[in-house]
Image 1 (cartoon, rainbow, N blue to C red):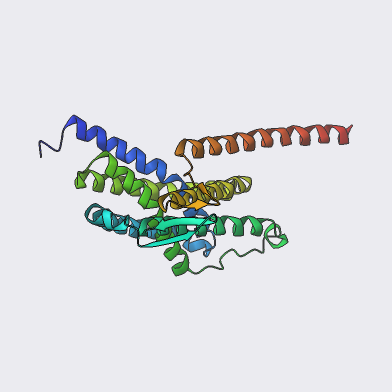
Image 2: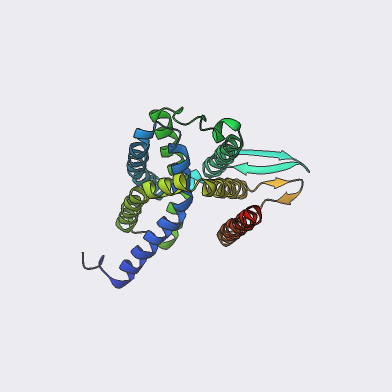
Length: 262
């Protein structure tokens, strides 16, 4: 026990928790958007239950990755269309690519839905998704997002106990924040548009990462993964654009009101 409670291990634990929290941001965004399709009275329950079940499965995934990561990263299928597409796929790359495809599809579907007249009139698809269906996708996408965070954690330490504590603590934070994020998006509908485009970028990032893991080459060019620094920079720019646009719109409305009253 004394060997475990060292300054180095405690610092590593703090870093692991922060890492899990930062990488869990896009997960929270997806959970909030997915849960809003459930009946209003069950939305909070599906978020909490989905995250709770995902925490347990994430611990199982952590154990599996620690014991068999080399098998998940061993290529079992390749494609070689010279000059068109080349690559060698493994389980890890296929999971990340699948997650990217689904995230991009979800984001585009929600963006198109927001542009529909029925959404503006309040007669959209709210409540059309079943509790079980939403729960399934929240758990599934939570696990897909977990791959990156767990692999990053494995690069920091090989102590299973530290990673378990970090997963449980970060999961508790997600349960606590999920309702707040969903409520914020509900009260600030324009922020939902920003959230959907951030989710779209998350999907593109997953696609680039999955393609990189598969050593994919398109038309002779290597697919490079989107750097995390680039991802956060793009998000910062989107948020800044949204803030400036909102303030400018308020100024235009104020000037229009003054001109109309004059």
